[in-house]
Length: 166
Image (cartoon, rainbow, N blue to C red; front, side, top):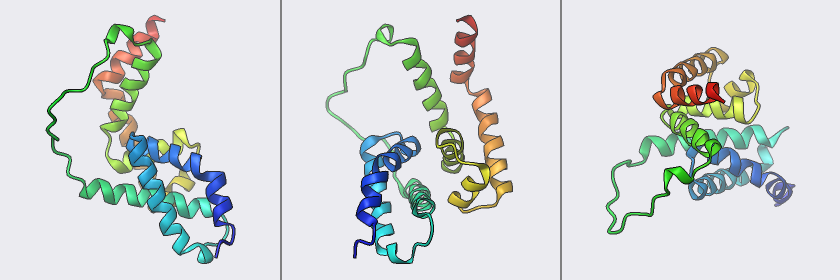
């Protein structure tokens, strides 16, 4: 019952995992998300027509949204605190990336999906609308709101100032 599924997974797994990571910002959770999406895609593989990426990306986005809605985001007590890096040891680019990811992480799941799919995956707005399962107007609205939130994020403001000084 392979019908190209194993080839698809071998060829696309790393890209799917990268996209999932950009949504969840955790490699292990991204792997879980991709595995869940691929399991769902395998069940429907014979019915998928045309480009399977469209179908699998949509599963990833929808699964991420449903996980986010159900996930308990409370504190997890721990006996030993993890080591923390000395901020003076970090290169400028690393701190810039951290500020950017903190700002993107503060967006709603749908806004984060739109930003990741459009800017980091290079999808057109029409493709993003199709993958997220909403209208083009909704994608434009979500993108506009996400960019507005990023513009006023304090971490992004310091990032802009640092870039202007370089």
